[in-house]
Image (cartoon, rainbow over all chains, first blue to last red):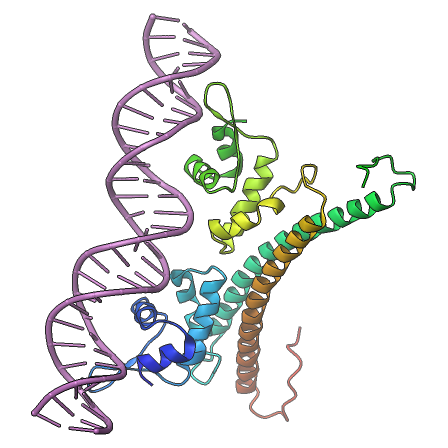
Length: 135
Length: 135
DNA sequence: CTGGACCTTGACATTAGTGTCAAGGTTGTA
DNA sequence: TACAACCTTGACACTAATGTCAAGGTCCAG
């Protein structure tokens, strides 16, 4: 497929597709007329790139994931090295997810605390001397 | 504390601290001599900002989290509105975490597949007994 | 009082990712 | 054949986040 169709099907601008190609995220086969040709799998690949960008990876970082961007495994090399690379990618992702989850936990705690205090305000008796804002 | 100490304790450059202040992420009380004064709680606040930046939030997005950046709740308003805001923040975080986890799942699948195929290559006989990594 | 360490603001520089425009080639269709 | 819709490269422009530098104020230790 050509760049226009890929752009239409993924929502990525043609400009971005060319930029990503230039930075090694995407690769194309030039047709006799010079147009870029994309395989069907490029659609999912682009979607994966978009996801990674949306959660804050840079193009440079995404480039390291080049081997994991096609969900279709048919073109993958089978080697212990490939395994180690994938493990490393997982590790990176986990690292990031972990940081986000920690953040989430902290905010959840704030919410719990807030709810607890609101409840306490509605039931001001019960031995708590945090007295009445006169609700 | 002054900007130099905050910078030293968090690793954020003074430049960034000023930039974040300018964009509403951080607020300071000016001392008589014009220096910025930060409360102790600014340390955790800055760390939270750094975390959010590192997982891909923009300063603009972080600004929406302004009420969740201090882990210390003592200054928090107690209102149903505050609760709704916090819930909304959690929702945003979950959205993001979800996208990352999906990505992780896909890559994990690739890894599993790769391992399966490597195992198959090493044991081409055997009626597909996939177990025994002989751990 | 002076030097050094710290602070201020303002300006310019850089990088990443993207938009947009210009000048031109290709192709299908009327 | 000619137009419209697509493609090409290259250039310039913008934003976000940060570095860095300059010119100057504050303050403490000697």
